[in-house]
Length: 397
Ligand SMILES: [Zn+2]
Image 1 (cartoon, rainbow, N blue to C red):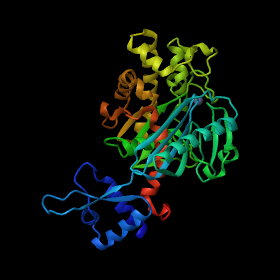
Image 2 (image 1 turned 90 degrees about the horizontal axis):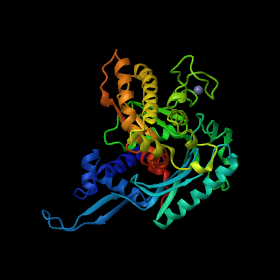
Image 3 (image 1 turned 30 degrees about the vertical axis):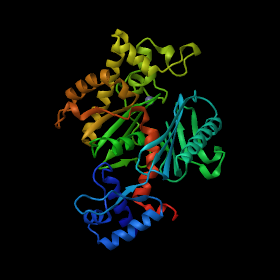
Image 4 (image 1 turned 45 degrees about the vertical axis):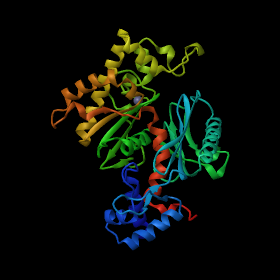
């Protein structure tokens, strides 16, 4: 009960706009429906655990005496998010307010490299990010790693398969140099969807978040909760068939969405295959998504046709998802968000033609504001969300 009340009080302070008028203990008591004495004791504990701070405020004009203002600390407890992408590594530290304070992103060709090597480099990046966070007065309380692969349900700390990295059954702890800082792996599409849910201006309660990096990832948030499936494999939209007799996919099946709306397929169709990850020549380095956006903005016909075809395929797959789960909305995240200008019209057209048994508004499909930053931000915020739900996870100072 006390644990729950600590969370309720921390949540009330967190929900208060710090730029509005100062928030006193009495205000919190009024908002959460507990006595002033009870709230005061809970506030004292939250200050002791380093979650809240209470500052003197200037004399209040009406009362004529100084007050005390509560706020969530911008120092102390923090969450570290890490990300292994096919072409990059990322790190992010957020404070207890959920604000990102440290960002790191480095280009790395990770596909096909030994998992141990990639994880050792990720650990080095993590150590740099933690050192920078320490300089800001932050202390990392939890670490989550976003990976473009399947992470089975349960506490195994294992990536079952990450086809675009070439990983099969990789235990993170087996390769992490420091046993005290081993991160917990999670599928990057799941973390992208959670970041959207936690940060969007008006987040839908039930939505499908579909994103693309090298592969296509989708995640389902249902009634405000991530739906992982019976084994943790939910959201494999990239391998939903959109052409029953279409081209062969790396997964062994035919006509999968990834073969039409995945990055490699779009680059190939646009005549830009040499710019994709794994392309033969190092001369063609650079960001393939930025290149697609540049070419599309310049009216390059093959690029526009490739994006139109990708959008149509995406719309076809998403129409099934809409009919199956009846979501409030659909969100285009990851690199799709940067191509939204060209993807939204064909996806909306396809949905408009196919979703006919329920009401469907074109605006229910929207781009994510977080784009590529979603997964690593979601990874960092996971720890903060856990602390907000149970502040006793924090040690008493
Ligand atoms: Zn497939």
